[in-house]
Length: 141
Image 1 (cartoon, rainbow, N blue to C red):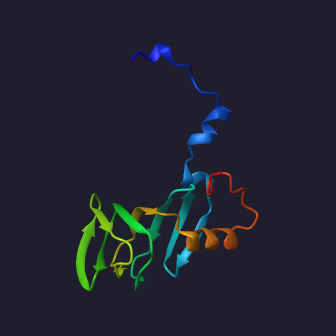
Image 2 (cartoon, rainbow, N blue to C red):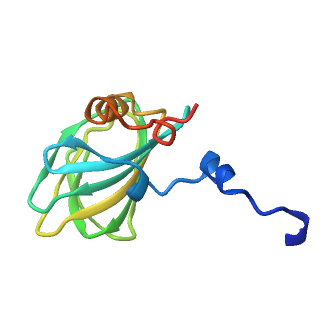
Image 3 (cartoon, rainbow, N blue to C red):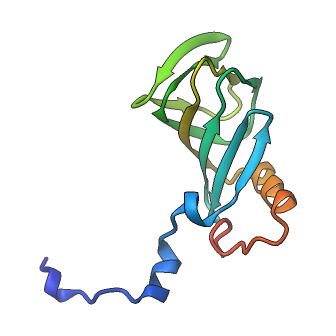
């Protein structure tokens, strides 16, 4: 493969495939103390999550498999009744319907969550909280 075999994409082409969610997508409150920039396609949802220090993400389940990548800080993640300390660099896999939640301690914890299939409940929150937002990026055709 040689770089010269390909043409440079036009600016308008970029929008089909690339988004910078922290600049282009408004935050959506998921639960008190946790908000996210949400991106969704037909197949999956990606959540750029910020969990505020000294907050709680109550134990819950969902039908979606979840892969969580901690990018900043740390928290005590509850998975199937046990507490695990997770910190920046850790990747957590949560199968569908496993009970999980988190205690966010003395610092904010940031993570990227990938859900499959789409988190319809999150996207409904996005639409409700951001009714005037162009859904071009958050919900792909």
